[in-house]
Image (cartoon, rainbow, N blue to C red):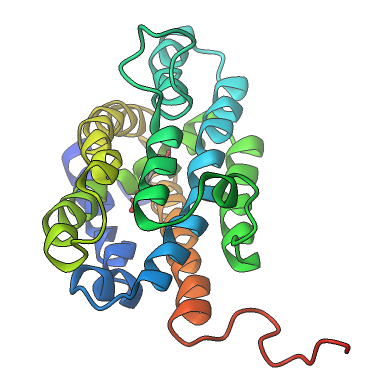
Length: 245
Ligand code: AHQ
């Protein structure tokens, strides 16, 4: 029976999976280097919207599975962060509203985000795999699967740094989503990482945690694969199928 890693060694192993983070995907690299055109950016915003509207439902599924009130009373904040608070008191209308504003700043009308007309099958399958995993997994495994946000601040900082120069046609106010996530992601990760280090303590559990995090990294990478094929290679699903006259 192999010895378990110490919490510090375990955290280091989790962070080492950052090499698979979607910030390294060719689509994200093109975005950062200013190589995306308006249609490709709009495709990304419209497809990522499906991920964003699924997140609060994923977090609600985790709450459903979680019997620990102390964990729930912190985790529930994530739903408010995305859906917005029930009253004007909450900081903002939430991340979903902010993402709609990002979409409008990029030229995607609100109704085209909300009716999900641009969501590619591959994006839908990847996102649905994530919410279905969290819905059926032990809540601790759901917590672990959120830890791709260990690497998220880099992605948000990259966009905030590169978009104004490369995509000056996008109103800066539209980038507020990325600014909000910088603070929210750090707070989420503090909580999610502490819970993961606390609950995955044997070597087998720690190996399982790495597999769960890799699964979620695959979710994010697969979303961009579908987006790249459709908007960069111009090969959306059935692109070569003749429509009946
Ligand atoms: O905007 C993002 C977000 O709200 C979340 C929630 C969190 C989760 O619960 O899995 N993950 C996540 C992520 C968001 N943005 C992604 C990006 O690249 O903009 C990063 C993504 C993540 O790393 O999981």
